Length: 120
Image (cartoon, rainbow, N blue to C red):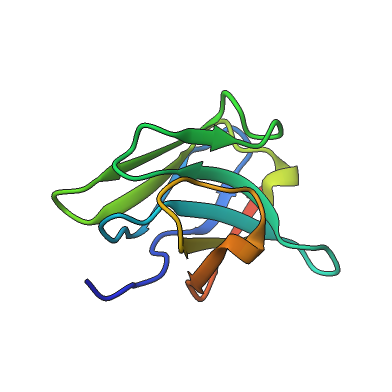
């Protein structure tokens, strides 16, 4: 399965919802990260293979949900109740491992990134 980066994104209002998706390959954990200008790439959510291990950053817990549809080779990041501080470029990444990790070093394939802008 060829890894294909993120789809979705755009400009929304505070409180809105956005869903991002990307290719999820078999046996690999998948991670979602975000980055703003001048900052390091931040882990926000990860899901292992086949989907039983899920981790979230505290900043998005309760608002974001990560899931995977292994039959469709897709991982989805559902983002609800978006806030202006969620504004960033969002990246999907494929891990070398089957369990998710928070560090970027554990991921060897990255999408091109998609901009999410949340206005107040």
